[in-house]
Amino acid sequence: MSTVLITGASSGIGAALAHRYAARGHRVIVVARREERLRALQQAIEAEGGSVRAITADLSNEAECQRVLDAVASETIDVLINNAGRGNYASVEDTSTEQWRSIFALNVDAPFFLIRGLLPGMKQRGVGHIVNVSSTAGRMGFPYNAAYVAAKHAVVGLTAGLRAELIDTNVHATVVCPAGVITEWADVTEGGSINELYATAIPRSRTIAAERGVGLAPLQRMMPADTAAEIIMKAVDAGRNNDIFTHPGTETLAAQAVSDRIGLEDAHLALWLAMRETYDRR
Ligand SMILES: NC(=O)c1ccc[n+]([C@@H]2O[C@H](COP(=O)([O-])OP(=O)(O)OC[C@H]3O[C@@H](n4cnc5c(N)ncnc54)[C@H](OP(=O)(O)O)[C@@H]3O)[C@@H](O)[C@H]2O)c1
Image 1 (cartoon, rainbow, N blue to C red):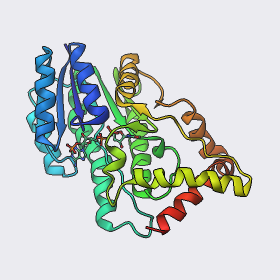
Image 2: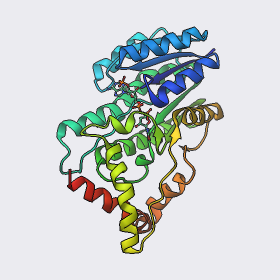
Image 3: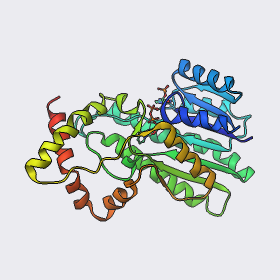
């Protein structure tokens, strides 16, 4: 039985991963801030005969990350899934210093602190897998959450640098880039609900597209958290692998963001103009 440490497991993709790994007979260590949610998750997993340990922590704080590392010092962590993450909702000029730092603290700093703490043990044992949950926003831009876009790009960079150091070892690093997953994420973005921005802008973008004679933005179908969890687990099972895009078509968009920026922006014109209108009307 291997042990999987999952951050951000009190809801969404992290909770789905915890249920699935526990059902497969792995010991799971789950971390998040909401104690009641973690307790309910623990009870549900234990009721199904699973092995689970819950640690309540605010990972946007370095001392709290260290407290988690101290708490798991006697455990053998085989898989670390840096899944805890939070988005923001603000234009670049409206993003406060506090919001910028808090988005980086959780999405970038916390994975770095946990990896730095757990990597020596994995290397010593010659086995381990680090999974960093980034986003398609880690490979291309979206408006009105540049702090999140920048942070998720940093997660991709952290994983790339780490992977280069792990060459020819049995410790692997994978970055996962989901698109829309049905979770609480889009409603709890800092600065307001980015879900509401999309809910208003998507219908409006149809009118703009018709008026301008341009196409509709390529939007991905929303995916259940459990499906995203299944895809992530397959990536871990595969061991050494490429970056994972959970939604069909997003890998092409990520490539287009590098090779054909104008094509990418033109394809999103109607949606991003509609988002600008909606944002400016707030
Ligand atoms: N949903 C999407 O469409 C989507 C798309 C691309 C990427 N992602 C990424 O997928 C990952 C999982 O998100 P999700 O969609 O499952 O959203 P979610 O349901 O909101 O889950 C986020 C998790 O992170 C935890 N978290 C938030 N702030 C924390 C903090 N300061 N310290 C510790 N834990 C914290 C939350 O728990 P507490 O509130 O209890 O702390 C929760 O368990 C995130 O990294 C997200 O950026 C999501």
